[in-house]
Length: 382
Image 1 (cartoon, one colour):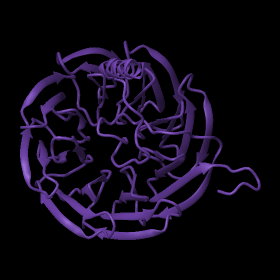
Image 2 (cartoon, rainbow, N blue to C red):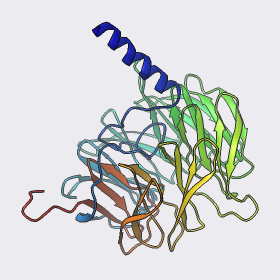
Image 3 (cartoon, helix red, strand yellow):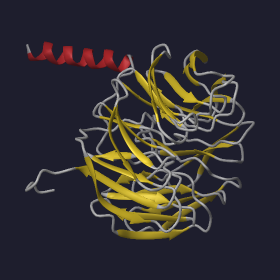
């Protein structure tokens, strides 16, 4: 009987995986959008209301998102500093100076913090001390974040795009593995699923590249510049572009399955989408957060703010958490888009929130890193 039950469980898990189901993410946020596929989904619960528990002043503006790993929050700022602070109280742990503006989010992989700067260099630092392990110069601005391909059969590989019109793959010690050239700047972060890396750029294409050798598997015309990063689930990629449309592409066939938005009158999508419960949620420069059906692209709901929504939403516990250029951090219902909670941070928010163990971490353009947790009842210990 036990053998039959075990076999049934494995069969059900296999069926779910075949249809794009993913296991719950770990209680860390080590990369932009939380996982290698850039789905923007956080594990655990998120009780409301929230209250500010600590604040860290980075000293200059922050456009990239914070990441959380090893009980630390990592960030880069406009002065070129990579900083690490304690996740529990916001106390500074270490600082590394790159000498140029950082707009990307850090990546934490195998005790390394990996971040690119506008000077064209990718830096790998020790997680605990911030000491430089290595740097790699590609000769073109690095605007997007690096990602990591991690599998049981291969050593982790670091993948990132740059303004040298190239997607690069490196070993963990900074040695080049391969380089894939394109016809335009690469602004976003490549999404990784299995042995495929998917990314867009200023050549108005969505590229699907084999992680093993850097060869192209598919090139999908999307008709406009892609500044955002795609999200992957169930063999499909979802991404918005400068031309005012969100689209879904089948990675096996290389075909666009549906588009959402007005190509003639729509505003640009600079935010990256999040995917959960058959819904795709993404911010737009029409000052709205949009939720559409993942199967066919039909509109489910929209939520209006008073500023452009370049902040990529994070989904957790049936809620969407995101910021706006109006300076507010919002939490809305994934089911119907109703406002559940918000707060005024006093500065525009471009960065995507990270949600780890019920704590929301978000950075502002003024250079503040804010940590919010559920408000405790009187007498209850934090």
